[in-house]
Amino acid sequence: MAMQQITILGSTGSIGVSSLDVIARHPDQFRVFALTGHSRIEVLAEQCQRFVPAFAVVPNAEAASQLSALVPAQTRVLCGVEGLIEVASHSDTDTVVAAIVGAAGLLPTIAAAEAGKKILLANKEALVMAGALFLDAVKRGGATLLPLDSEHNAIFQCLPPGFTGVSGAGLSGSGLSGTGVSKLVLSASGGPFRTTPIEQLMTVSPDQACAHPNWSMGRKISVDSATMMNKGLELIEACWLFNVAAADVEIVIHPQSIVHSLVEYVDGSVLAQLGNPDMRTPIAHALAWPERIASGVARLNLTELAALEFEPPDAVRFPALTLARQAGESMGDAPTALNAANEVAVAAFLTEQIRFPRIAAVVAEVMAGWQGSELACLEAVQDSDSRARRLAQASVAGYQDEV
Ligand code: NAD
Ligand code: MG
Image 1: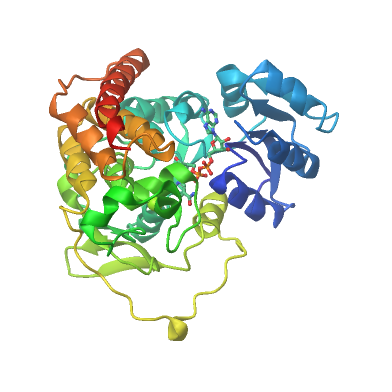
Image 2: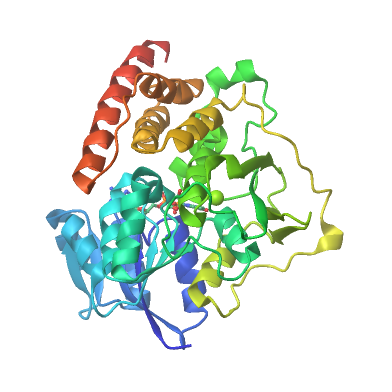
């Protein structure tokens, strides 16, 4: 394998830290080219001291001067979205780990796509909000798109060779015909509130929502797992990545998070990818693809596993799933609105402005009145995103007196 120069967008987060852990195990194959962080500047400084990247990126000039005092002389400090775009598309980087959370990751990830990079995509929100434009950029730039999300990485590993999608084929709605594949099955843990009495959900705290039973993740995706909006976003993510329709994707709850997802074939075969719930496995898979490298993840001991359970998701407990499926069926800018409303609602819950069940209620209100349109350009994405955020803020305001 040739030496890969790697940019990690969002290196201070959960996926970023796991990526650096895998990279550090293979100094002969990977070199860190650029690291970026938004808030935890001390963590970014430590990462720069350890990996000595050519660039580090922070949100603004103030953070840049703070970081500059803490990093090796070889590391140039840039700031803002321009800085993120520069390191994502720089001619000296081969591989970009897209691990910024939320809509903030869109522009740098698109820049990496246009520049023809190998993109390891964790930032599902970018694909959900701008799927067609994102995949156009992948195609135009000749980029390679590999899924880091554990479910999509599992499906990618179980699909037949040469399957469309991932290379950027885009949504046709009939991606499965002629492939021998009959269905994709996304597994979901059900999160921390899978069995909590529904009436108690009005009083759960942000920390309880972030206490995921199997995975340790950033706070936004942890809340998304608790509402199961994460699986809803992943349903739309799967439609884009694998060129399938929402109806081709089933969601099943699997509380142990050992079976990471499955592919059903027309002959009745079902292929699944299993492993311990540790993101270093999909990260190592995508970093080395099509080869394989060690990840540091503990081996799965089948005889020590408790039973593997599967159950259908409860639509009453998890209304976000239905909202996301509807957005995935209508596409256009409906997923953009869904994602934006959800980001606003999750942030409001995390700052204790609204109660947990109101996250889905806010998204439902925004989607109920949403007049869909097509997304012809990135400005249209930004417009739909901003419009949905304003509507969501108004909806949040209506629930604030409950807190
Ligand atoms: P996190 O909150 O731990 O880290 C987010 C990173 O993004 C940090 O480095 C942060 O500094 C940076 N960031 C935040 N806001 C930013 C902004 N406005 N501009 C630039 N940078 C910003 O999140 P995470 O759990 O690592 O998740 C990252 C992405 O990966 C999310 O899209 C999430 O859905 C996806 N993902 C995460 C996991 C997981 O196990 N953590 C699994 C699958 C997918
Ligand atoms: Mg996932």
